[in-house]
Structure formats: structure tokens, C-alpha cells
Amino acid sequence: MLISRGTDVIRLLADPLRARIVDLLADGPACTCHLVEDTGARQSNISNHLRALREAGLVTPEPRGRYTYYRLDPQALEEAAHHLGDLARRARVSTDNPRECP
Image (cartoon, rainbow, N blue to C red):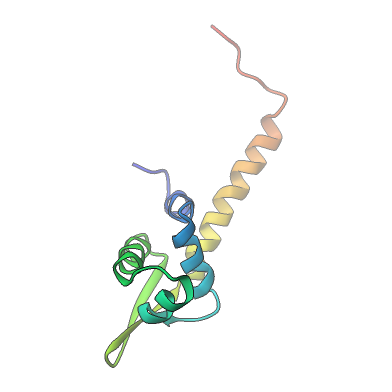
């Protein structure tokens, strides 16, 4: 079990293609055909990554006629950024407090 949705987002974005998809969606909603064209990846690969991003709450599908557009959820990214910020603050505070060995 992962700690938080923020952690899930960080784990998901570790994949270069998923990170590229998120980067592209930051510029606005796009359908799978746009993402295939922009990344050069296969449609099935893009669809699998979109499913993982959707299940994590990072993207939202929007049906438009025959196509489904995917919109990035900025709040999910903000939560991940907040999680990383908390880790950095904890590390900064505890940098001079090493654990004692038994």
C-alpha cells in the first residue's frame, strides 16, 4: 500500500512516457490520437498509460462525440508537489539528527 495519492503520482511519473503524456496534457485536453502523434508510441501503449493515470486520479476522460479527450487534474499534481515539499522540510529539519545504532 502506498502512503498517499501524492506518492502514487510520483511513482507513475517515474515512467518517461507517462511523464511525457502528463507534460502534453498540461497544455490542454487531448485525445489518444493526439498523444500517439506527439509521442510516437503505439495506441495500445498510450491507452494503457492513460488507464493507469486515470485510476490514480491524475487524468479525467471527457467524451466528445466519437473521441475521448483526457484532461489533467492539477490538484493531483499539487498534492504530489506538497508531498515532496513535506519530505524536503523533514529532511532539512532532521539533517543533523542521525539515528543511534542499537
